[in-house]
Length: 486
Image (tube, rainbow, N blue to C red; front, side):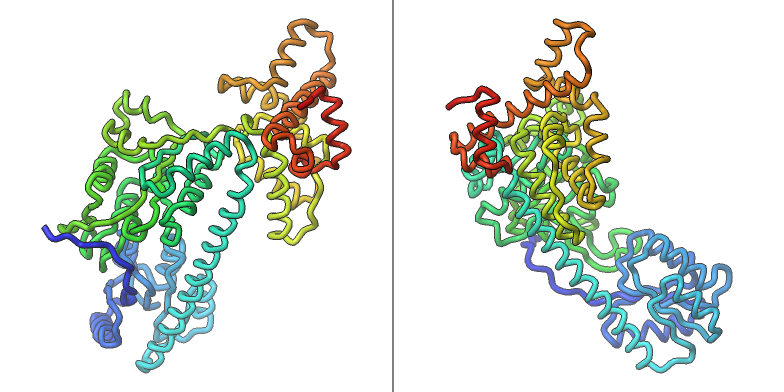
């Protein structure tokens, strides 16, 4: 069996799908487009065209006749745009009615050419449409680079707690070791940021970081996404397509929600981890890749192994280094830092003034259980920026006592504020006012956050004041009020 080594992808020729009920026209366009260097797929009607597209045909542009028996071109265009909106469509017709042209343009047609047409007309239309698509792709690539930059910027704010600092130290130790890493943690805690940080610290930092969410795609699509496919592997596979593993060659592959992967795909993934090779869908050649594997899950894989839902051998292959990212409620000292970052980030993004979070709301943030973790905090701060008002968030935080009191204990790790409230309720029965309970809980949460930040900064009061966004004098007063001393 031949082995292939993955290398940088070479631009493939563009493929045109010609949809016309007249065989003479289809043959003419096929020969013309092949001569011009295009790949060509043919369909005699709208139904056949949709069948090809739904089957995964790799099509860059569609040339579609308006006048066809049964489902005409306008109806076919409507269905194409409903299911495959990103593929540009050029309409062809002997009918030059203005209403038909308007209908086609309103439905999303990229261009409209009347029959008979000169070869140059079609060539110009194709080039114009494909150049537009190239610009869109370049724009999307720039957006992706911006997202990666923002992720890196955000990651610098994620290490404000002792627990996350310890994780960062582990990442530094294993960055260049190329061992497989399994990241555990609840949804929204920052597992992807941890994975990206590991990549950025490693000697693979100048190569690609490729993320695939195993829960976002059905099994068939996930397999072709990961491993690619050969021409003819299935209906519509008109050209070879590289998978994510090939794209990640010499870089880092991050498989999020690995616990959602089906057993057949688990077996193929195990082969990649063991031998560094795989075969594409419909292929008979082995493709060799060199990737750093990082996986993440919010599920208990050991329990899944016991129940037969996850392969034991794959689990041990993935679990060489295990990193548990704690929930936000266990690292509350990060909350002021993260909130400040999100305030500035979304104020820039939405061109709004940077609003201030009141001390009362910040105290509520510190006492809140954050079931949605960092992602929930980000969304709350985003709403504050967009609305330029914290009223709705304050009502959500203070008006729903459940998350303040039960979220952490549900995980078996009550905060000191929650324990204090429980104790006072036991001692006083129903005599304590709800407002007083909230006030005492907030005070205790503030004390705990202050203690953690001081510990983290080794009692550097100026640094602690900066992290907590208070004046040095206010910090000294808070230290005194809370009965803290170094």
